[in-house]
Image (cartoon, rainbow, N blue to C red; front, side):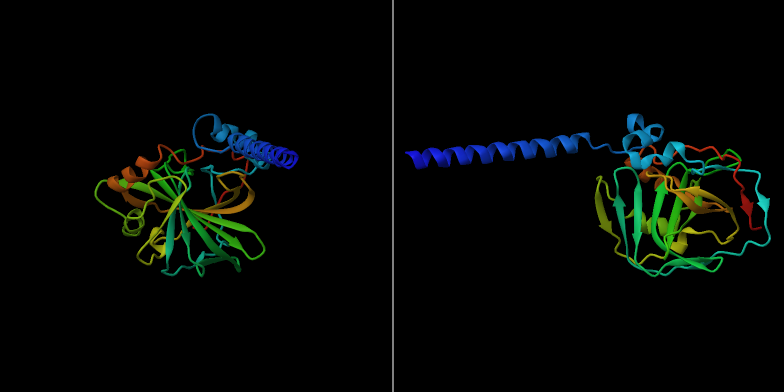
Length: 258
């Protein structure tokens, strides 16, 4: 009897400990903030969701911005693109669509190599040109070997009939559910989402998603590309909005290479 009582006490203590651990894990899960583009967890409150997001509200070089008053700088060199067709996957993060690319894609700017990490699709566009947004923006996020970041923004404008061929290949694999990923069957060259004219505006900014890390060199392409109505609708079915509102330029210099 005494042995049975001892075993019972041990079992009860273990059960209580397990219940407390599970309760703690559930509480942590329920209180962990998740950022979004709308409502209480939208851009205006990103800094309140996590101390790591402090730059979202306190940073002086936040992105996106309105591109206006750019100064021509003929010393700016063309961006050297080294993009190859390769395997990619499409991720629905719950906030936006991200394309993950295979290694080997990179750009060279002022002699520095930046490797392409991912493509992000934001709608409407995040950057504005003289106050005007477009229907969507593709962002090419790169990082150098020493951790510096460079991002290219390609804005896309609705064309009722003209579908972008590269986008059509990607859109066949749009993951409909949040936090899911689909591999694209065909090889994809990210360069298919760049214009023929590689003129750009450049400024120093930040990532446009939390933690809003600053020190990102942005290159906003001057020439827009087309997106069909159907392609835009397919993205809008997943997200009503997936873009951050414009940030204060704080007098930053914006330069154009042509």
